[in-house]
Every structure is written in structure tokens, then in C-alpha cells.
Length: 629
Image 1 (cartoon, one colour):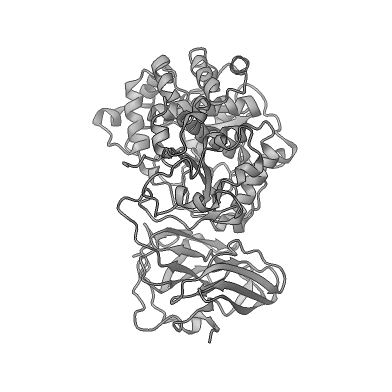
Image 2 (image 1 turned 90 degrees about the vertical axis):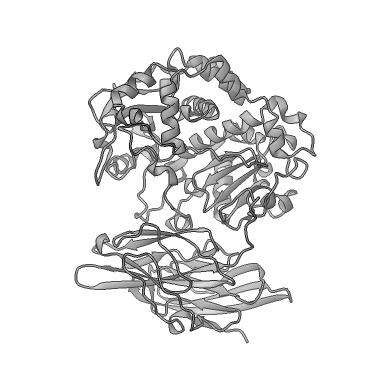
């Protein structure tokens, strides 16, 4: 017999040391009977509080999962084909749910009912979900006004031992890697916070799923998320996941299994593109499709995607990258969320490269601006705000221009029809006469100092004493006298190529200009844009006379549909930043700021008022190393 259980009544509470980030393990008392059931974590539910329902099947291999709400005010759960759904009821009352699945003997159905009280929760732990053993997990606390962040504590109270990464009391977010398990296991956490008088508590859980061991020859050596084709009827549905995002991938697929989009169509439609999309959550594919339908009016991105085999959007892709081993582009889902609930499904583990270059005395921040304003709206992770597509649109377009320049470097249009279907994707990419090599031969970068420093800042190389002693003025001299548009150009020949295309296209399509500067490296807490003092900087550096030929070389090869000469001649003359002023003061150069689009102009004040929270560098590009076989 199968039934539904409340986990609270069946767990043995085992508290986690406050600062240790680990727990003891519940080995003697089972979480639930060893049968397939629905587990509910909380018994005293309130509006505004996240709720998790877990399909717990420790002894069965189940598939074809589908959750449905059958009663109550509609709620939004974003992983209806997962073993765990999580949602936030906004109204008091009774809610009912059902889940169907196949256990190998046929279709089974379970049901569960919850009751939500009329009180409003002041604290919520976000967001319960299912994760494969070894995969990265992040959890975030949401606090109502009046609760203090410094009072926040996280505790593990049941399940296999979890080790939080660099955890201290007061952290609004915690991170860990899911421990290895021999069967599906539930790990339960308690979140607490205080208003100085009363302590409030919320509990939540993660389901850790057992997964096959990762082979030593696997292309993805760290555990990655479970994903699926966005279009189940895609002619490539059987190959998309195994060829692009699987821990079972040990050799590059053949182009006959997953050809370039260009080999399917020279003028792909949105449907053609979506038949190559792989997602961890349906909403991610929905957002990408809406972007193509509403914002690719020049067909730039559909044309650039011809050089790819697939588009992977998953909650654990961070940072985004293009990979010639699979021919696919991998996109961080943080570029697509609109609702707070969608954002909750994304892993927000910090970029591991954030510590690179900390011993250097300089920083080279950059940003995209239009009419002396930021073109992206920054929303801090702790803010539960719904945003519009336009708020993050230009971050996404810049990213796509950049990563798809890589794709068209490895698979240029001149070679799309020269590859045999029996050729592995990786072999075809490595046989290419890379256009970025040609750029380096004709228009090489000269500064060996900047090239070596880039290995420290972007690849994690150890800084020499000479490099540690460089002042911002030294870097300004090295950089300003060379022909790179950004510090990242020096990280590799491939990145130099992509950076040029990125900046040219952002101005050509949107009249958006790129700022780059050399500043000090501030030290301490609560650092903001005002602490970065500009030694040298420019807006629209790609318009420098010596750099334009490099940009034209790239544009002619990445997107030959454009008239490269006209585009390059239209680039604005660079504007110098004011040395001695801070990064924020250098946002406004030479003129009074003008409003952007009507919808964005309404948010300008919030954009600037939140600048103290905005990272000076909001995102970085990334190069995924190639496999050895």
C-alpha cells in the first residue's frame, strides 16, 4: 500500500554545528517506510512559504513523472516532471495534488492534500528540489522586513551528512555538493532568523537521487544535472542529451548523430532552433523561444546558431560557454528568469574564478552603457522581484554574440558543408583552419605583460612578485598602447576574436557602448563602485583607428551577411574616462543622460539607487578546456 507522509513526524532531529557546516547522520531511524510515497515536509503551512512535495521511491526505478494540481487556488511549480515539486501558495485554503509515474509495471498515481493557514510567513527557505548525487546545491533564505540577516542560521536536521562550503552564521545562501547515496535520500534543513524578540523557523528538504558512477574517461567529470529535450518530437531527441550534457559521454558524437544546424538548414526557423534545445526546466526553453521570437528581428542569433549542434540551458550551467567537443552552446539560466520562483530553481554557487588575481593591485572593470546609463537592471539575489525580459536582454545578447563567435570560429560558414557525417564533432572542430589564428597572424596583440597577467586573472596562474608590484598606472601603459578592447582579450587567441565581435555587434544593433578601465583593487567589506578609482579608461575602445581593422576582420568572417565596411565606419570615436574619478562617476561622460526605452526609463532610478549592490563586474566569459580524447 502506498500513502503520503509528513516528514516532520517521522524524522529523528539531529542538529548541525552552528559554524561547522556538517551534520551527524540519521542511521538508525528510517525517514519513511521503504515504499514509494509522497513526502510533505511542513505540517503548519502559511501563505508566502515555500512548500515541497517529494515523490519518494527508494526501491523503484520510476520514469515518466507528471505532477498535477487538482484542487485549490492555482500555484506555480516549475519542475512538473521531477520527483520534487516546490511552490509558494499565496492564499489560505486546501490544495490537492496528484503525481503519475511509471514504475516498470505500468502507470501509478499518488495523491496528496495540504492545508495552508491564513497567517503570512515571515521567513522562507528556498527552494526544495531533486538533485543527483555529487551535483551542486544552493539554498537561499528569504526574510520579511524586520528580520535581521545577521541572525540567520542554517541547520541540517536529517539525512546523509552535508558539508556547507565556507558557511558562517548570517549567510543568506548556503552551498554544498550533494553527498553520494546508495538509494534516493531526503536531506532536511532548518532555517532560523530573528527580529530581536522572536525567532522564526522554516524547514525544507532536498531529495538526493542515486546516480551511476562517473567514468574516468567522461567528458563531464563533475556531476551535472538531469536534462531533457525541450521538444520531445525533435528528430534529434534521442541524441541531444547523450551527445551534449551527460556524465555518460566519453567520446564526441558523430555529425551524423547530431549535425550542425547549418547542415539541416541555411536559414533556420525558431522551430528548427528549438528542436536542438536541451533544458533542466521547461520554463528555460520557453524563455529562450520567446527571446528568438521577439528579439531576434535581424535573424542574427538564428544565423549564428547555424554553427552549433545544440543549445543547453540548465540550472547548474555557470558560467556560460561554447564547447567544440560537442558543438553546443551552454547557457546559464540566470539570463532567462523573470519570476522569483524561476530564479529559485537556479543554482547560484559563486564563480570559482572569483578569487583569481586577488594578489594583483589592479582591476579592469567593464560594462555596457547607453545614453550614459547601465543597460541592464541589477536585482540583488535577496530581492524577490519580477523582472521583464528587457531588464536582462542586453546581458543575454552580449553573451550570445560572444559565445557564438566561438562557434563560428571553430565551424566557419566556409566549411559547414565540408564535414562528413561519420566525422566526430570534436575532430571536425580541430581540423578547422581557425579564423582566430588568422587574426593573431595579421593583427597580433603585442603586450606580453598583459598576456601573462591574463593567465593569472582568468586561468588561476600564480602571480610573480613583479606582477604583484604592478600599479594601475603600469597596466594603463601596457593596455592603452596595444590593440585589445578588453583585458579578457589576452586570455587566449579565441577570446580576443570573440571580444571584438561582441563589442561591434552590441553597438551595431543596439547603439550600446562598452566601457573598459584600469582601477585600483579596493580592500575591505561593503565595497561598491565608488571605491574603484579610474586610472585610465575608454568608452567604445573598438572604435580606435588601430583596432578597427581587427574588428572588421572578425565581422567579415563571423557574420558575412553584414556589410562589414559600413558597420566598422559607423563605430563612434572612443571617449576618454576621467582619471581620478571613481567608476560610478565615470558612468556619465560628456553629456546629460537620456532615457532609454519607456519601460526601461521607468526603472532608471532603481538601477542607479541599487548600484551600491551591483558588482563592478557582473559576469565573466569562460573557456571550457577540451577533453583529451
